[in-house]
Image (cartoon, rainbow, N blue to C red; front, side, top):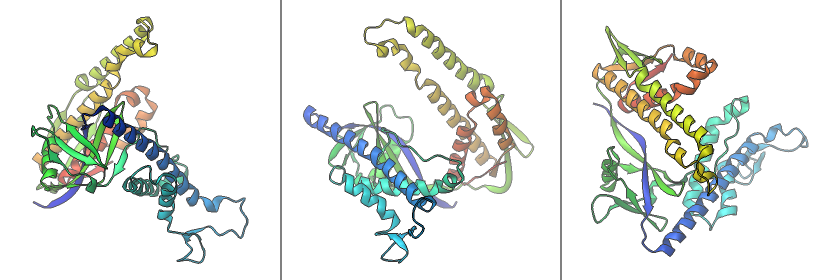
Length: 364
């Protein structure tokens, strides 16, 4: 059984581990300031990288203006006084050094340049607009900044990030988070570049872990043909056997019921008791804000997991998604399908889980 590695990201709720109200308030103030710097810095980096990339298209400059993006010390035709990657780091350092750890600045710069390079061809073709980062974007940092330890109850974990103490909250964790944290604690798996995200006053650790993946004993010539459709989310044929995963009643009708309930509450909210403005009138809707999204996400994870388990069981080394491109084109013209059937989300989850076990996915 061959062994390789892959990076998994787990979203873990954390608290500032401090009982002193004044200190805790200072820690939160620090986090919000970092979040603001990260948001501003990210937009600055992506803007400067785009301007540098398109400097040669500024036809209103003098003809003898040099536009070669290279370090002048290494190339006489270069117009930069440092490497291109370092230009935006120096920009961030000039604006924000002293307000935020340099480790965070370095990771903002590295990540943004990586994203820009991946999208630059699409920008040039006009297929994609320049990324715009919002105020709630995560605060990135290197994995070496996190060292876990167990709390006094041996249930949760503690760590310090740039002198701010945190404690995890796992609750009745039914996933693999506690096991992964324990393995990271004893050094069995490596903590990679991760991030802290603040959502409506709650703090989440987006923990990236590099761990070995087990490649199953699969036969590449055995092909599982899967079809994604409304009646049955996934229909699979392997050899002479056929399988169906999920059904319309289970997925689509439940989703539409959530939509109908939310729509009904929206209409009734106009008659709710006021007193504190919009917040009180919309209070009954808060329960439904993410209910549909969470339900769909949960179902897609379930369907994709069952599909990959089926492929492993039948030793199918290749997974073919039949006529998927045509279905997606048809869905663009059908408002109902576009709104209620998550083709893209399901395919992404299938690819992710297939990669974990070494199955090759082909989208036809």
